[in-house]
Image (cartoon, rainbow, N blue to C red; front, side, top):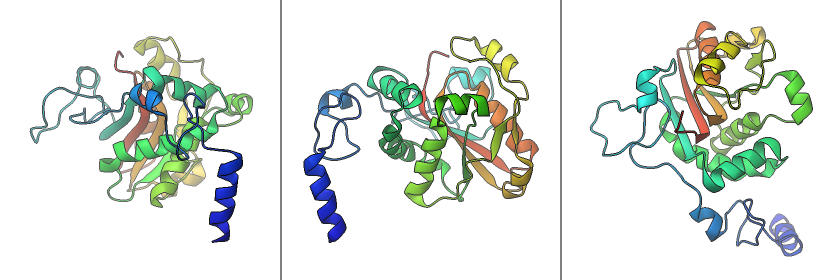
Length: 242
């Protein structure tokens, strides 16, 4: 009762705002009508490899987009919550570069809906890691915020420091697929004192954006080499032009 009263008082002083435009809304973690209309959530038939939307209806067989067919993924299944365009792109960039960490809350709800098929079997949830120098500069890892919020939503097991960047790589933004894969190489590994947590089990890797999939491939290879039985990936947004 006291908690409810405190929350009511806080909402009167600080009414909920849309994370997209800052306008007043009816409840926390929501979007105003205009921003919601500019979000491109993925639904219906999707690629089993990355979650990109596909035309037609599922026919009981594994369906994959052209990108995943041309470049087979080392993980077993992948899902994306939304397309990296419109208001969704703005929110991802605000979370990643704008210190808008509060966006991780609603984003985790969207991610949970998209990743529902990947959560069977109680997978260990972990984020794509940042190199410590980049983490020091940015102050937080947006993928770690998403992974933690997602795990909390369903009470799933979570290991925020499962993976580590063995060496710093140049920014991947604006790079071609080949450049991304060449730059990453074997730059990601499983921490020695965490390998016992993934042997023989499924791992769900969480990231904010998937472009070529090079980073997720490096993370997946590291998990499989460390003894994971299966790796799945869930991303907030998918760049479909890659």
